[in-house]
Image (cartoon, rainbow, N blue to C red):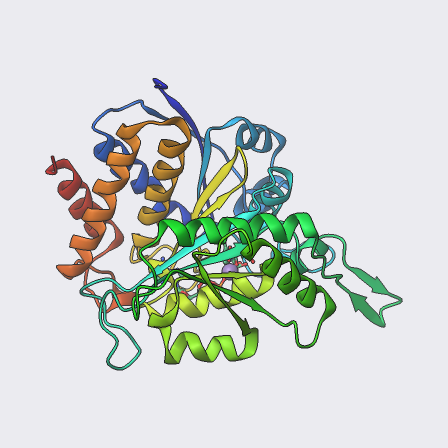
Length: 365
Ligand code: NAD
Ligand code: IPM
Ligand code: MN
């Protein structure tokens, strides 16, 4: 087993540092062993760009590529943009996704005991699915490559390749196989979410989905067109087990899904490829609450648990898997006991919630 893991840590902007910094201490407490995670902090983001003119320094890029894993808070300041109008602060996430080929963006969506669900009558455990978002192409393939013709017309190409679709669909089927199925009926199913009824590249997405599905006869399959999908996620969320979809659709439905379980502050993500992984909550830098010490840390904490899981499985290291389990247990207990920030109608600060979680993991076997 490794005697230490190199983790590149980028806190980012806004609430990023407020949630990311304390998460390091929680992971160390859960691991019971300081130094097993060798945290190295690097700058990136809009604030760094404002200070230095460089939103994603070369040293940070190199460290991310060399690290065993990357942990990120959140980044971005609206209005801090490139000449093409897109945000500078997002370079860290987007460039890493492409250069490290982090093709799978895995976003678990789970309604926890103790959290008020905005959907009438839906109880804890009745929402428990994974959004598997293709993370290396789709409409995001155009990032930095869109064109503006004579100030009259702008074009962002939507790219969907056989290789890109096949590997993300296979990832979705593998996750369904490892799951306990949909809350409503226990069926392991993968829902292909697309716009095949209108656009050729989504019809191709569905065609490749069908081809891969032949290798998984034990897994039920279905299609959902993106517009109706947004309704289904609100009206019958317990039907879903694993949803696979293109990059932009995944971005949008994962925020909707987060709302159905109580809010963006509860949504973790794992962005993984073959040998690199970036772990961050699905939400952004939340400028509207930054600096007030009230950011919900649970999405960050659960993203750190995803990181430990990914490293633990990848290195056959049970110490990390055990620590991930402790963190998840602490988070579930914390929510069930009502230890929450104002976004979840709680009265606690970020720091108070984190202190409680650290206390919990420290007290566990
Ligand atoms: P956002 O996710 O930052 O915030 C949306 C809403 O959710 C806000 O009301 C915010 O207060 C709330 N919220 C988000 N996270 C929360 C948390 N942990 N606790 C409590 N409330 C939380 O999205 P936005 O306002 O559209 O974007 C703000 C900035 O973040 C933009 O610059 C955007 O580009 C950037 N962004 C970055 C990432 C990332 O770094 N991964 C992701 C999304 C958006
Ligand atoms: C997300 C964010 C990102 C995206 C930004 C930060 C580039 O919204 O991770 O969901 O658009 O994918
Ligand atoms: Mn998003």
